Image (cartoon, rainbow, N blue to C red; front, side, top):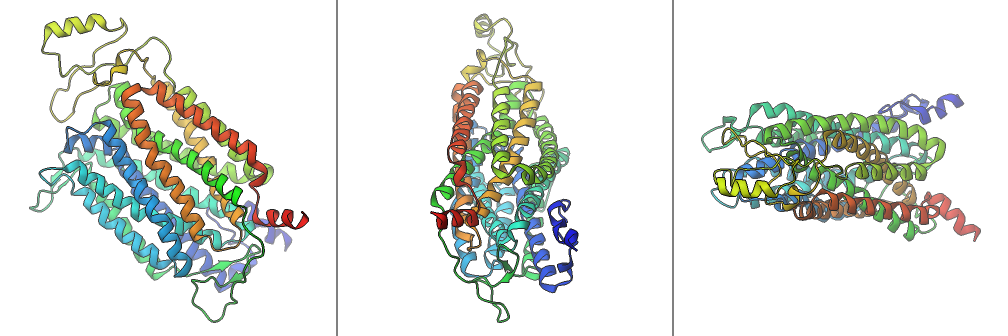
Length: 517
């Protein structure tokens, strides 16, 4: 019997300890059914974001030729800005009302925003600003991540929580895989696509992913409304009644003795900010960097980066499996430290080295032979000119001359690019799951909606500033400065974790220490 009870520590991914004797209990079954709906919600949220991330830049270029990489940063950041505003609001709502209410509301907003994104090419002017507004609305709907993580933290015991958080991160990674894979598959529709109705809407490689995300959102709303039930347990797994749980046959949750460690909460939010800033920079710069360094056309960039991100998603799942085992042996904090160290190696590998230079775009001056000859004499001998596009649908190839660093900064080779992707993807996966796990343990059994809202807002703030930072620094100064600063930021995160690691302990340990002193 003891083996059955303890078997939850080694439960395979997504099994959720259902093999023990409690699985016969109706509350237990309902609890894990609801938790799995939250897994699915996180999965679809991830799909809804990544299914368009590799095509935003070429889509923006297509609907507004005047948009540059700096505006791309604002478009990507708009998602996180919307999420940052919404997360505390939805978290507060979930603390006082059933979780179904903020979840259903946020999902409906998300559905409408994805439809809006598919229509941004239709207006005759201001298309870039319509895209900006659509992404902000999608992000506002994604503020439900705080509610999802708060629900799972409150519905699991302390012993179940690491597995549950790892499982939820695995579902997020599955969405991270499927999103780019779907985008890569839909890229074969092409930029022209087919006309839908008489309003000018075209179903193409840019609009079809957003419409598919809207359809998945409708399915998610139905599951939340029809199947989800409210559950809350203490650290030992005993069923309690949260403030937003309306039932007469449950015991009211008693106020937990002791206060949450504010230093640990602040440190966790700062570390999470660093982790999400890192990933925001990574996901924003991948497509422009590959187009500049490897002279990929828009369609090629969407396809190849979709494949790369899909592979990183599979890698993340493998990392989650390893993290669940390693964290049980060495603890959560060493895994977080190791993840940040791997991320540092990834950005260090991505720094430009050598004497080879990227291919240059020659569209603007190729017809002027005098300028051509004069300018060519000023270039390094290893610099070559990228061939121009053969038609108007492919677009220019190579590093644009408007980015002056293209003329003197060494190119990043494909091997560097792929190696950095692998390292950053692995490190981020480990840091992501450990950040949420540690934070939920620090908060303890108290309602976590607002606190999870602030953590999500912290991450969203990072994902707002990250794209703006990297798009401006990359455009003006190049990858050497952009990735050099990232190495410094990761080093600062490592120093913060090393200095305050003793404060990042579960609520029960903090309470025991307070009693002893």
